[in-house]
Image (cartoon, rainbow over all chains, first blue to last red; front, side):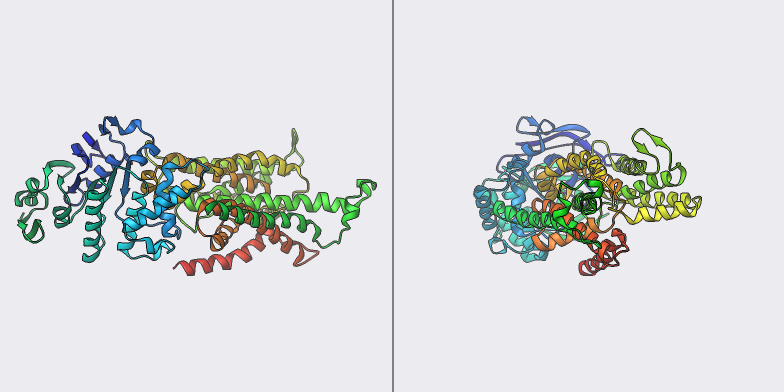
Length: 259
Length: 337
């Protein structure tokens, strides 16, 4: 559905990402794992078309992303960044309605259909009661759910999320994980989730792409890719990776740093 | 819902701006008889009321409307582009460039020299300030643009602030070599002056103002997204590079036109957008047109105060906007922190 073929990108001298090839299957919830600075965010930006690869290409279906306008792309791919800090005090409804931008002409105002979609997105993320609240005054978890609602209002088939639980406590992490699983299952939204949280990835992702030093090391089904050996390769950490019967997925317990 | 609200707000602010335009010419240190001012049976040369109304007050009120509306709109756009509520139309060095252009003419060009329609030292000051403002804008843009990528707002801000300081140093250097008369004229120009004396300067500035407003018209929804963040704007369908260029050049053009018409009148570009946001919210589809109308009314009001507070002596309008705007700006800073 979405694939990067031998893409390279650098911000200054040298490459942050080198010859990366990665594929996202339709309907999947793909985790993007790797240590800090390995190129996860850069790969997400290349997959969403925010950055253009300096080498290689990214395809959505059979179309290279560079042949699509920003509006066309925004109708197919939505992105949830790690954190969102508006310069002004927008309401929650304002923030969600911004997701309708790719469907509106330059002078067009949102109509009843757009408002209906925004309401449905707020309901799907459990934030309907926050509609008229000032976005800046929300908690971290509420903010992230509102941004997910804004992305859902784009009505895209693909949702790319960059560490959406990074600054959240355990309760909110679990809440976001449950929400993503449900949206993937019920709405058939294909998702790519960049995260540092191995247990989150193990609990919600059916596929994984693992990266280190700007290169893709492995990709495939979660159970095959997420092993003690992979954790050691990625983070230089000895870890127990076992199947948790009650949770119904792999769990990772870090044991010690290895050099 | 949004349509009805927008219409109601624009009708309200429009009424305020039109009301200010109609009432302000009637106010002044000299009482005028309106019926006599419009009495065409009296020759214009003998009709003092008509002269005061059509030569002194009406051009001045219209200049205040154009400059106030333009600076307020430029302020709204700059704040969204830079993602900084404290940005002004002068943050990126446009006014300092304009001031340098004007001061070079005031100091080094003979006042009685004439080129075409322009008497140097009179009509050339607006031209020189416009030139200086446009040069400053192009320099800042050249510094902040990154081929193939969007502009860095940090670089844009730093380049603007540095250029402001650089031009200010050049202005001081030029002033150092000026005589007392030239220095007085320089200081007077820097205070801002709406007393343009005829409709000609307003008409001359209109093509630039209208071009800028044409660009403003397509910006508001994209500005909403740009003020949330460049990456999120891009992924919601905004062509960020194009929007940044459009916002930068429209705001710079509008500021250049306003400064060349009436000098650098401060605080309008920050006070008006924030007052409007306090009243109508932060959606740029409402804030931008409402700021144009409220900015016009605000500067007309400040000019009436400037004309009346020490009548028959006039206080420079830039002093009035700063006295009203300064405390408000500080209150805003405290509130934000």
